[in-house]
Length: 290
Picture 1 (tube, one colour):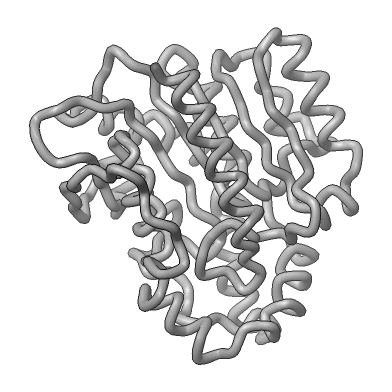
Picture 2 (cartoon, helix red, strand yellow; picture 1 turned 45 degrees about the vertical axis):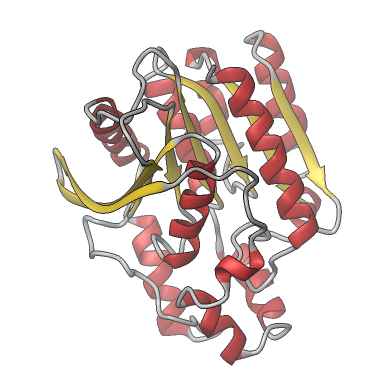
């Protein structure tokens, strides 16, 4: 998952974006101008939804092409800043390409979204402790519980084509959640994508990479350059794990991209590399979810 080093790097680069500009993006203003339009985009049906789990009620956002069609489902795990306008816009953009997309508040046990300040000051100890406290309350067990509940919910939606596999994507701390999701419901998850995922490979017995033998999904790992510098062996461990499982996996370090570069409200957003990662995700989904 993300750790203090990740937040320190992010905090140091946050000064490159003015508080006013970053606040506007966090509130949703300007995000649609940052993200390129989708060619032949579908009209959408959007809804804020609540999903019952064994641990409570999760708030989430569900979006899919309008009408009576059925589409592959996609489950998005956000980063440490949680469910917010940027992730709703990313979900809408993916839905415009023909998917039924659910983006969840992973911190619902503690509080409803929004779970982070509008423009968080990462150098403020109280803010950092709050964010880390939310993240550290999540465990491999809660990830499994939630994966079952969210995938089951998707499969009850008329817009989701149950004859096609589900995809799951995760950002920062959400990267490991995709592996736990794919291992928990392997017969449903056909594709996974991790963007600047943290803690994918650890020395603990519950390291996410050890779940690969249980997985049946094709994968994309888009790795930040500074994450690779901090843990250069992780990409090799992942390649070996997927090769032994005979599963396709695209594993790439994105040059110049810093941890957190994909969401459009990020202080280290890298447009060109984010678009490259997005395009690779679409290729994966077209191949693995058909």
